Length: 244
Figure 1: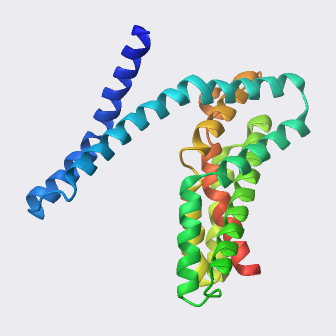
Figure 2: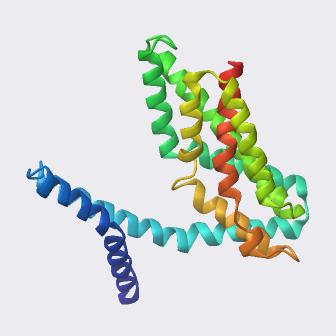
């Protein structure tokens, strides 16, 4: 019990240290530049404590649960030798983590609200919910496809730089033909998919798979899936805007 408390105390200290620059910047501009006191200071302090505790628990959860789980699953799939099962799992993992991503949910909801105000969709709750849901599904499918591509790269040993460069060349070409209203959303979609839910599991999958395949270097081949998860949503959302 004592060891657990000491470990958690260490995590709290690490989390506070990581957040200290953000706290210092906000405090400086609020007190020195704006010369104003913090509104609802007790609530701010309580919220800050919750953030620090939550970050500490989140990091501990990643190291104790998600990273080992993702690596063990990847290694078990490689032992079974079923490429179809591995690719199906990769797609489902990418789809499931992306569709549950809080950042994607928030951005999709905000995009639906702005689209409604701009007259791009009907000004109703149903239309906004449908727009946000469709955007989330398109992005989730794209992340699933991205993880499949990343797994194939690990298995085949394809050079990552050629795939990434080719992908962004395609993005540049598609941007010239896509509706202006969808371009910003598409580019943001590439960022919001790689957050708290997606990154740990996808990274663990790539590293675990690279470790379990003879001739693969986890440092060289295990990483890079997140890059595909950033790139593919841009392509898919641009295509969705051009078609729909």
